[in-house]
Image: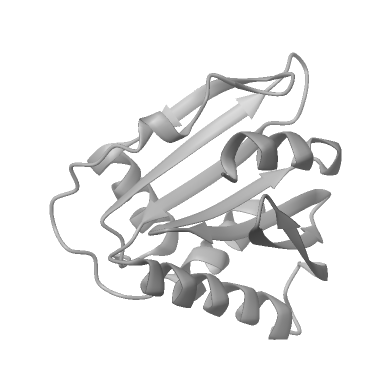
Length: 161
């Protein structure tokens, strides 16, 4: 169910063909730890784009993507996804489309939409499946984080700059 919801998020937001050949691995964007959570997985470069595309069932309009998994001993893992797109305008468009589709879809597992500012960045927050879902763009990067609600501030402090 969770994987299907993740698929829906990205398909709705980034439904366009991907230019072949990803070379930017985006690994520098993910710290080794976020609050008490340690990074336990990192997928970058062509492998990450392949995973994102496979998750969505089609190629997406992104120049590069990366996925990081964070967890603490015995805890539920959190995920952070990022895609580099062609421009800030495209990042803004994709973020707006994703937020709109999540808000308007009556069958969406996401609820309680809100917008918060973090360091001058508009962050769109939803809850669903026992998680906080944080969506924003910064420059040409589109971000989505899924984490326990008590860890969302840690992720915003670490990633939303």
